[in-house]
Image (tube, rainbow, N blue to C red; front, side, top):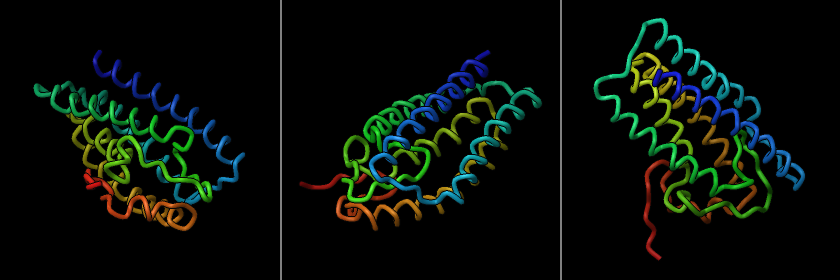
Length: 186
């Protein structure tokens, strides 16, 4: 029962996020934004779709149950969800599942982006690891943590390059680490 409740919430969340991303993409394109990394985007989508297929299959077919210590990854998952909402709301209309670049825009440097360059990618990585661990779906946790790291290694380079070329990204983020919080002295 816990599995289906959590799974339903996460799937609904992802579907709502896709609707928000589509709306944000339209808003940005109307202001002159363009997409970068279109060829690579399908691999991000495939990793996420196959993550859910693998996760569901591993739990149901292998009759996985929550680990006795399930609450530990669950707590990390809930914390990740809170930071996810903070990240997405900080980006506002600039948040997207695609790499959308609005030339000349000021890069968002508030919320968790004050402390690191890519908090949302850290959150997605934590979710891909923690969600399967709750239910002892270890194969899914390992395979998709690696797959996600591979697609993000390409995506992040594309995103940072495009942002450096068209925005004030370098100036705002040169002292921030990609995945670990950095506290800058004023």
